[in-house]
Image 1 (cartoon, rainbow, N blue to C red):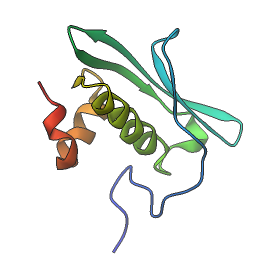
Image 2 (cartoon, rainbow, N blue to C red; image 1 turned 30 degrees about the vertical axis):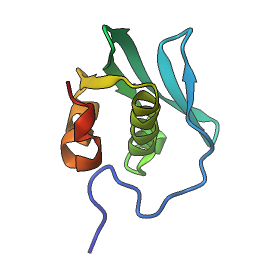
Image 3 (spheres, rainbow, N blue to C red; image 1 turned 90 degrees about the vertical axis):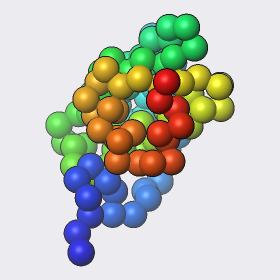
Image 4 (cartoon, one colour; image 1 turned 180 degrees about the vertical axis):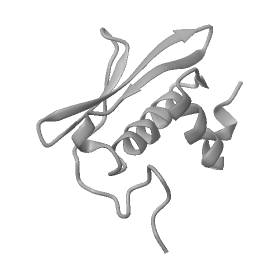
Amino acid sequence: MGKAKGEPAARRNWGSVRDNPELNRFELDVDGDTALAYYRIDNGVMVFTSTQTPPRLRGQGVASELIRNALEFARARGLKVRGDCSFVADYVQRHQEFRDLIP
């Protein structure tokens, strides 16, 4: 059995996802590159607008790790989530544990 598209085969120790509210984005540094998830907050909803993963990091689950953590941040803050970014929208649909975040 292979891994699902965009999912890591096993959790890696890439470091911590951090929120950078000054730039309205979450960041995850991996091997000298940074994956980004941009957002804005509107009326209690964290709206994800773009997810960017450097080409050499794609297909390794980096974006999934970034978004999973970003969704946990939103949950901890009591925010709902909307994925205007197709990656985030697809991620939430594939992971039932985050469907409660959809407004």
